[in-house]
Image 1: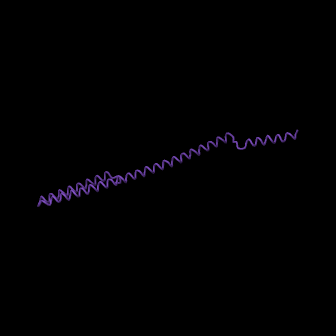
Image 2: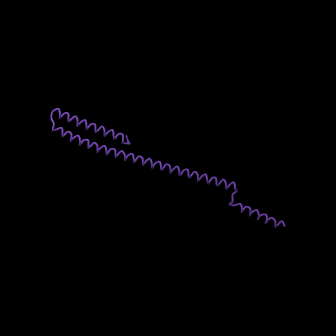
Image 3: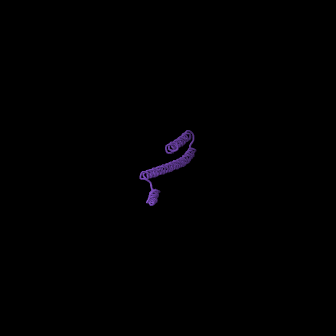
Amino acid sequence: MKFYKAPALTAVLVSLALLGCGHKSPSEVDRDIANAQSKAEQKDQDANARTADSVSAANGDARDQNKDSQHQIVVAEADGAKTKAEGDHKVALAKCESLSGLSHDSCKESADANYDAALASIKQSQTSHDPTR
C-alpha cells in the first residue's frame, strides 16, 4: 500500500501546483487592479494636461492673430484718414490762393490748424484703438 500512496500523494501535489499556476491570490489581484487604475488615472491626467496645453496654445495663437488683425485694421483706417486729411488740406490751401493779404494768411493758418487737428485726432484714435500700443 505504501506503493500506492506515494504516487497518489505526488499526483495530488502536482495537481495543486498546476492549479496554482497562473492564478493569483486575491491580494495580488487587488494590487494589480490598483496598479492598473493608478496607471490609467496618470495617463488620463497626462492626456488632460496635454489637451489643456494645446487649447491654451491655440487660444494664445488666436488672440495674437486677432491682435495683429486689429492692428492692421487700425493702421489701414489711420492711413485712409491721413490721406483724406491731406486732400482736405490741399483743397483748403488751394481755396486760400484766391485770397490776398491778411485774408490769405488767415485762410492758410486756418487750413494748417484744421490739418494739424485732424492729424492729432487720427493719432489719438489710432492710439486708443490699436491693441499693440
